[in-house]
Image 1 (cartoon, helix red, strand yellow):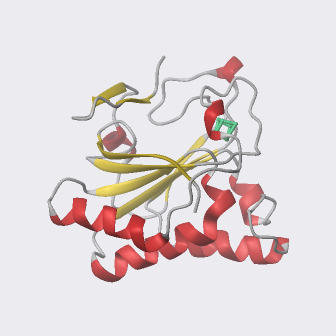
Image 2 (cartoon, helix red, strand yellow):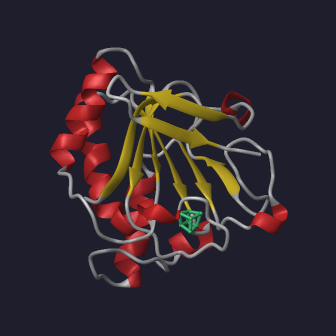
Length: 195
Ligand code: SF4
C-alpha cells in the first residue's frame, strides 16, 4: 500500500500511546487541507506484512496501545487496511485501532467513496463494515476551516467522533495538541492539531 509517513509513538492522535500510519493519496479535496503533500495517489509501496511487523514490534516492546490510520485518505486503501488490522489482531488481539476519514459515515455506509482498486458501491459498503468491525473509533467528515473546532481529535465541528467499542470514552481523547518528534537521524515530524 502507499504510505506517506509512519510515527512510532504519538500521544496526540487518539487515546494513549499510538503508532500512526499516514497513508499516501487523497481525492476528497477539502479546501484548506494542511497536508497537501499526502494528496498524490503515488509513491512508495509497502507490503501489509512489513507494516504488521512494524506494529507488532512496537506492541511487543510495550511502546504502543494502539494504531491510528491517518493520511491522506485511509478509505482509498481500505482493503489493505483491513488485511493489516486482521494480520495484527491474529497475533495481538489487544491492539486498539482508530482511523480518520474525510468521508461522512452516510457515504461510507452507501459505499460512496473512492478506492484504488475498482469495485462496486455494494462491495465498498461491505468493506467499510469489515473495516469498522476492527475499529475502536473513527473521526469522520470533511475538514471545513470556517467551522474549526477544538473538540478532541476533530478539526471542524461538522466531523463526528464515533466510538464503535466500549474501550475508549470521549474523555480519554484529551485536548488537541501538536507533537514534534526529533528522530536520531535528524528527521523532524510534526503531527497533531494546531489551533
Ligand atoms: S480528507 Fe484529509 S487529507 Fe484529504 S483533503 Fe480532506 S483534510 Fe486533506
